[in-house]
Amino acid sequence: MEKTRKIKKVLISQPTLEGAGVHLHRGFGFREVPTFDPFLMFDDFRQDDPERYLPGFPWHPHRGIETITYMLRGTAEHGDSMGNRGVIAPGDVQWMTAGSGIVHQEMPKGGADGRMGGFQLWANLPASQKMMDPRYRDVKRTDIPEVALPGGVTVRIICGTVGKIRGPVRDIVTDPEYLDVSMPPGAEFVHPTKPGHTVLAYVFEGQGCFAGEAKPSSYDVEPASYFDLDRKPFLGDHSVILFDDGGRIKVATTDSSIRFLLIAGRPLGEPVAWQGPIVMNTQDELRTAFREYRAGTFIKHSKAV
Image (cartoon, rainbow, N blue to C red; front, side):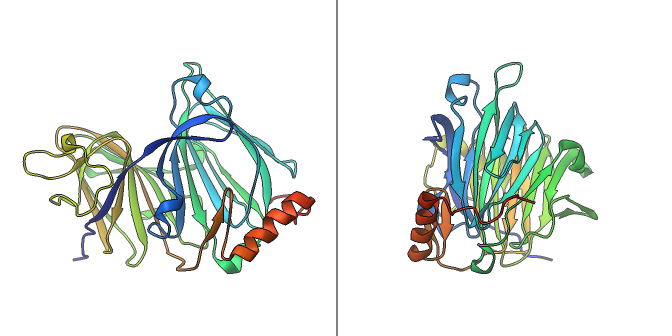
């Protein structure tokens, strides 16, 4: 039997302000490098007040990374300096590989009820791919398979495989997995993971018990209410769970349902030089990127694929 991954670390996403004034919760970011390698940053931008999201993310550059945006409600209009335009609707995913450089904007819009929300994940690119041609993978809700598992568990497969069903996003250099898992009360979810890969979960509805463990060894925030009398962690909304190595993960629910993202990828093990929206391997590469941006030579390709 494969070794079940234990909990290595738990973070609680913290309120922060980004873009032109968007209020969001950051699960992890700059100060956690390289703990989540190959992932750099995770933001939860669920918001009910239009004044807290409408300012959006005006024109800004990216180089050396991939940004993965998954919308739950409302929409996000995007455009870039190469003429690409589009709308990410509820249930849609945009997997943008910035590569050698993109200048773009993302402007969230609320739904009919004024609510907006979703997640953005930053994934690093290896040195050999940082200057690759930029590209978009726009994945519509209807193209993302949903698998029904025993016990009422359902999984939307954005990237990776559940059973024999494979998600639509493929051929990504870090070999990632990105699943949206929903579990009813009294259910269990066991899923194989690749040994050596970084594996994390982000809870955004309900609560559940991860790995069946007693209290994890490392908490950045430790609300006592997250524990039952058996000292088993029932982790809820805004929890980031980082797992130790192993061949599978195990999640269980008791009297509550849960919905969470399960994200995995192959670590790069490379140096990270990061400033703002640009992530390279050396400070010299960073200086070059910003010098090119100021000089108007940042964009290397006239059209993203």
